[in-house]
Image (cartoon, rainbow, N blue to C red; front, side, top):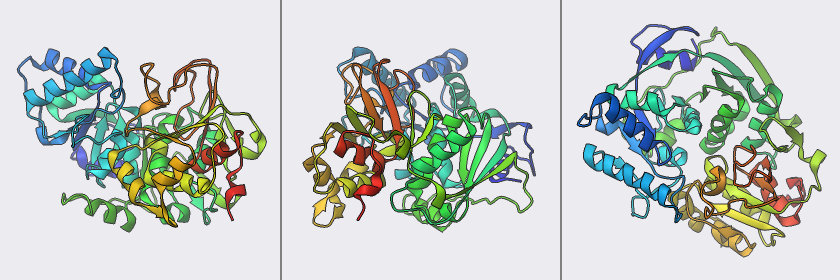
Length: 430
């Protein structure tokens, strides 16, 4: 069996499962946030009763992160609904906004707080819940109705997905990042090329990759239609997890003779920095093919591109330079923001380097990644061309439907911010 099949077999009480099987899965964790939490809680009360209690208060994580730093009354009401439900159910894992407990983007906060663990099953009411597959667990996004059912029962009816295997070989060039690799994958198979399949990332390149790079890969499997992403849990994984939780967990590997839907191989030495052109994540182009495209703004942030390693990459590129276009920097979490203010490149901190380069620094949150209210930080408001480290570039995704968004790695975004046009990051490496 594959890693995904082994996890689902264990959590359904079976010795083995195969793709296409439908099984009742025991859930380890359910995560929700301010966009989908209110709907989930409403359905739960409607179906299980106004006075019903959740199946396990210790296994629910509530993280407001999307539309929080805004004057919008509807957005505020959503967070109020979260607060009311958390209080009513006495839920211990609530990271409320404007409190010392506030975290930021759920998909980065979850691993920071030790909630993403090998061998477990995580469901979340957000499509990028698949990020946690980087830790060798089955993690996927679900709708409000499924989440409400889990709230009441701790179980979900799941079809076992086939697995597609993506093998990356070679040493990653210094100007490439995990974002380039996943754009290469999506550009090859398309936005529906992995529909309801697990996407397994392996090979010597992945073995050398840190957890944040693996998180970027798994984060964007949904952009190819994938059900979940997965990486084998190795020493890098277990050291990260054990530093953040005392919970026990089990690591799984693919059997030698596991069956895959197909296998794709990539030599990373042959991959160039990539972008996804408007308006689809699979509209792939080499940076060299679109170099010189005029830009109005740059954006570095989100669950895909707002981690500390992403900002270190940007700071390395921007050290001693000045941006030529509006450039927004939004750390994914308050912990990332803290790391930015402590991590040094030569004698300056990452935060200081980006601020001195002229970047506009934002509070930890999803911010403009999902557009949102008109006062969302970094939101596109008109006919603009933006290069962004986020994960989607559909019309209106970051605000105005008239705008164009190019997706790229933090290296490429930073290099382009310095020139005002799409730029190959290699020119900023000594």
